[in-house]
Image 1 (tube, one colour):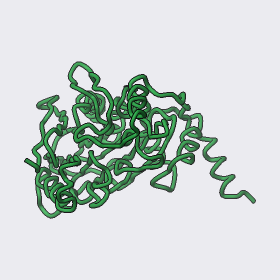
Image 2 (cartoon, one colour):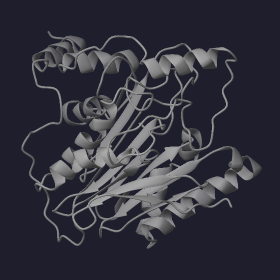
Image 3 (cartoon, rainbow, N blue to C red):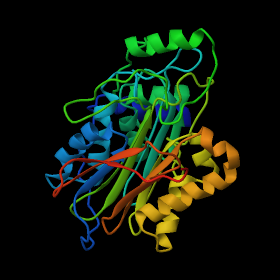
Length: 341
């Protein structure tokens, strides 16, 4: 009689030959009145280039889920001192990656503490679509990825990350800097981009049918404790989507986003009638109240899109920007309003 372990192993092996990348399976999309328009927003100036990857999907009438996967894959592939395998390592010198994805039907998938896989967002989508689970972590997540056909990449730091890590080893002190989620050097992200110095990218999209999806991918805080996990791969904290209401995502100090289940809180505030920016602001104010005087030591930011196609953002401190791409304006980088003056 086959055991559960043998069944899962056999099932995984049978899927290993499948192509790696955004899934192209036919999906019957729910139809509802289109109030908004194709739209994609993402965190930081990094999002300008990532949004172009998502817009290639949206502009052809593609699904929001495919767009948010394709968009953040652009950032994961850059291999600099930012998101993905080029990101800063933990304090043991190992790069670990986290990601999550969620669609318009409450389907969601997540991976955490994943090593040596170039596109954790795609592994998260495979978890969503091909397992009965929501999250896989560590060695188990890597085993699943390999079984799905994702190649193991070399275990080595990018030049920027290695330089930053050697500098950090001189003191081995962990002091997060507001608006610089890792301590990496700034690098250009492309012809429309600015400086890419953030370790997280979160993305929300609405497609031509009016459906919403979101994604989030990160290399985590640079020089974090081995095993540290932030909000980015946690559905409800780093990302949440309710197609009838809206979608929200977070960036910044993950521990404090987790304390209020940040992304879910923003969506619930929109359910109560607040516009996206106002909902983001209310969530930030809640964190500021919890932190008190220590709020000035951190940065927390939220982005949100309503089911009506409105978008907005708000940050705890000055310096947060988010990128927007739609049919009318194509590309723009918006400086978000903030709480602490």
